[in-house]
Length: 364
Image (cartoon, rainbow, N blue to C red; front, side, top):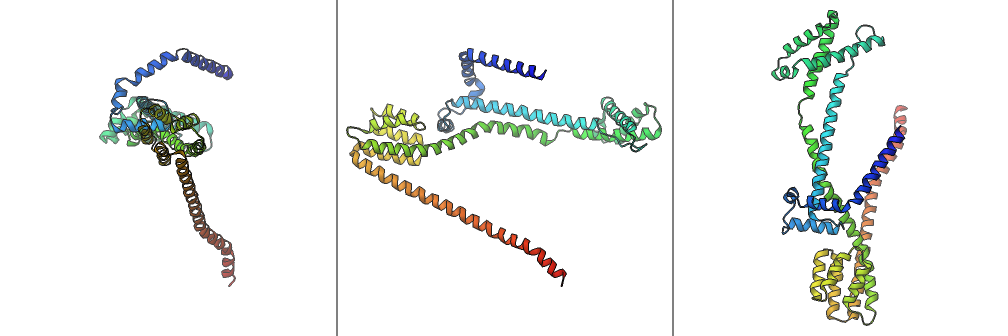
């Protein structure tokens, strides 16, 4: 049966995906309308503000092709989904706590080890607790501090079962404490309110956190790709009849991470070469890439040979600095290992010598 259910679920999912693919234009249009709804506009920063530009730059750096409005929509979705999950978690925990009280085991007080009697005691206690929960307004008694009246009502309820006095008082005491516990569990605690709100906040922050991780990864890819672009530029500068514009075109074709920035630069370059390169510098905000562009700017005014020499010197200097930094990191790591290893060796020697010292003192 379970295999048929699984097959049915898979077929339903396939049908859903087919329909989504069939109506993808309508779905895209609906998403576009939601992006520009009043709620999304309310939570989206003003287009002229720094916050909007920062988020736009973060999306571009993370290489995610969505608008800032779509990002706000994803944040809101994450907020509501996490909030619902938090509420469900609190509610399920609350229901489990109530069930635990309603199904609480009794202590067999008549014949120890007799399972039939114990099962009867448990069933009777659970039945009486549920009846008391439904018939007695115990919350009002607990709130008003009228515990004696609550005890009387519980005793009256249990007495209706026409049991021996010993059994009646036993069950009344157990039911009374169960009702007190139920009353305490039903109080709204700060934790029950805080948990859904904390999860909702985390759900709202999650998309931006993922984007920042992707942006960090992009920065690492930029460092790798920049080395390749520098080598390619050096090779191109050695050719005759080639200018900076043609070099930029070649870099755009070979680049992946810097491709959007180089594309915009190439489009502006014929109108104003220096402005195009400076605009790209501001957009990328990468120190090493900025130095590389500064060298290309020199190529507009000076000859190619001078530009190639400057680029070669800059590359050697950068590689030397990177090697020095790597060596420093390795040395620092080795120093930390030595500092940690020395106390551990001393502790190991002490543990080895400790039994011998104890035996020596005992035999003295």
